[in-house]
Length: 546
Image 1: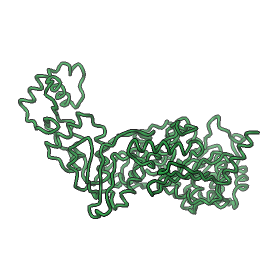
Image 2: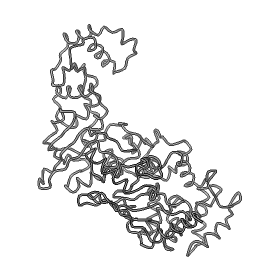
Image 3: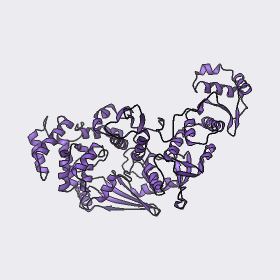
Image 4: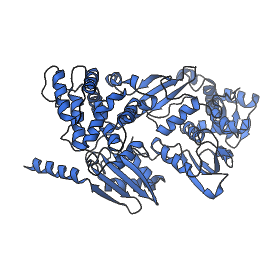
């Protein structure tokens, strides 16, 4: 997704009623997916943002829905505010009048009732002007039919007569938002405080996942989502991300061949979410190739090492013995069988992935990557680079095996061939005395200084921080991307374990090409290149010039 000039539905000034000395924070709603973790961190510093409690005091609330001023000076739950804003974000002017007028008629003051009202207020008729009785009558009849009628039938309606029938014979309530007639509407309790939110599809998705605990309770998950928000949504439903959870792909924007290639049986809900985040970052034309490489089926046009119809087991063992410092026959046999299951007939991808590890990491890291399969869950070839990052940062092969099981190694792409330079770089953004850490998989493909300049401008235009704006920038924006790469974010990993692992890597490890420092207050950037990576880059450039 690209940056948007979308205005928030609500802007709330929140505080901790128990600790007024903590000050206030202003939060716009709905909260963009990429900003959810930042919002939680901001509230956590004030001891706010509980999953289910209404612990945020709403000191001020600004919106295009004046009726919501009724939520001021009381406690609110972060996710309830966010869900209400998401619901109201789709309302047109007439729906806004229906919602607010019915809130007056029903005497609505509670958040639960406001949320439930968004699902039924469309049943009411609101007259905001009496200047056109024909229009009033037809709008009323259309409302009684659920907002849908054949055009020819609607044209046959005597709008004036219907309007007079309504005005003269039905009880209307005069409100600041118009005269409202409830038409027998009842406030259905679709939502109860602390429970799951009613299913609502309000944004684009990669996978639409229906998850249930097997006890009748199910929820619709829009993936990808913020990991923190996903966890909180599952908490509300009582669903835990475990093997006992039943999930079904209700819909997907991925090509059928990609869906069939996903190892769904190996992935948790969080694993599927990470896969969807990865898919969102990849240009559509590259997605099939990435999945193919992960599953061991190179597509035509991609270079492969010379081989026959099958690489013989003996040849596979020979190459492993040459690569790995301490090969073990049992481990090699297991790796061979796993590679055969992944690739069916080809074995080059696993060997290539290990050679990439040799090129960018220490021998002990290579040994650890080789030994992951000893711990029940192996890493796919496309996951080995991420696995090596964790290993180099101090994780054990057993721990990385667990990360593979959870799908946490997916979506992080290093070089596909040993001779390729890493495009991974760490990034620190400093702003207003705070620092946020990210990483990028597109180092060298965009200009950090141009990107920071664009983020500062966009932040001023939309009222968000430059850091938040930087996290929204995508590779399809020519003002800073020298090599446009599709609608994926230039930065990723805010607050993630992978980001922390990348920051911990040894200076001897050229897997991280450089560190980018962006000072948003001064509007300047600095790049500190890894010496070995820079040396290799210069050598490649010299060879290309010969």
